[in-house]
Amino acid sequence: MGYKPLKILSITLLLVTLLLAASTAAIASPGAVPMSSRRVRIREITTVEGVRENSLIGYSLVVGLRGTGDQKQTVFTTQMLANILLRMGMQIAPSAITVKNIAAVFVTSSLPAFARAGTQMDVVVSSMGDAKSLEGGTLLLTSLRAEDGQIYATAQGALSIGGYSIGGGGGVSKQLNHPTVGRIANGAVAERDVAPDMQNLASLFLQLREADFGNAQLIAESINVEFGLPIATVADSRRIEIASAGRNVPALLARIQSLPVEIISPTRVVVNEKTGTIVMGRDARLSAVSILQGSLSVEISTNFELQPNPLSKTGEKSIVPQTTVNAKDAPTKRIELNEGATVEQLVNGLQAIGATARDVVSILQALKAAGALQADLEVL
Image 1 (cartoon, rainbow, N blue to C red):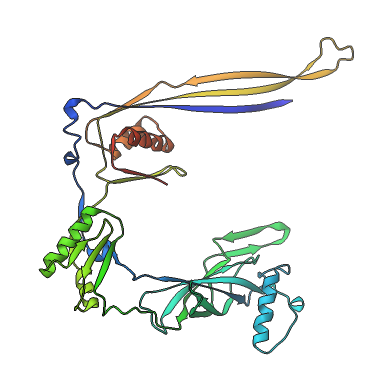
Image 2 (image 1 turned 90 degrees about the horizontal axis):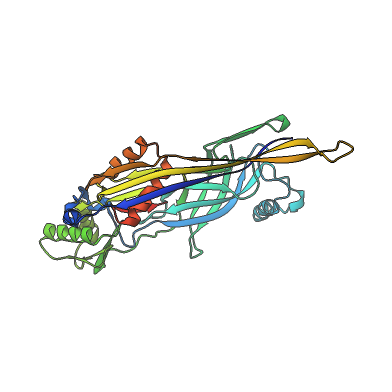
């Protein structure tokens, strides 16, 4: 006998109507929306094609743990340790090794562009077994390989852990952050030169971090004005070709990357549906729009009651469900925005009528679908 709710059904009714009259057609033209521009250096918005980091990976053992390493059933840990000892001239059966003070790990790093032999890099060490913590451990010498299978660096050193794990009696434990991932500052050393030859390049390319034909043209024009020659041409919305034949390429790039340029910033609204977070550009504008929002909530619940059977001679009782249906319909709330209103004004108006963050996200999506949001909408 008791109370058991069956289900609660919530239906949100959202109506977005776009009010675009003939008198506002000229106002809604592209020229009416102010363009947001900012002055930056070319190095802040472009990269040099082919100049990038390269990912490295290796696997090894972390030793010196305080009983928080891999468990006995982690077979590859004991096998790795046996192989290391064999290379050092000691042959031991893997079954004779206790592994609670060691842990098998993956080691990752990034080899910077123009790295030379002896260049130091940070490494990240991550447990690949069932170790509880890598706190206090030391990474053994590890070969780091690139995609081509060649060794480009080696890593070794004591780990720095940004968390901890404490276990007590009775199953009580406490953990902070991720104690099975550690970092070694300057723990890897490059073993070979990977610097490309840039002196004999006939041309090079700059890549925009965000593709835009307008910004690509502005950058090319700025470069040509600086050198007084048409050495820069726009290849596409992301690439700018620069003629570098007969020039000192490093000096040329240093001069180009230091040039200031006035670029057009994209107008964008970013929403995260999972968390209800909204990040909006200052210049995002709306067309004249009217928003009506209301909500209908239907609640169905069942109360089980114990009642005697009226025809029973033995007085046997039975459980009888009593179902109750309640419906609540909130009055429709309305917001009207004039031509050129900002997204910030929209959000403030929605908050004033009690709309939740998720309601705001849904309304922004409906506005974009209706063509009333003059900005790029990105939903994460």
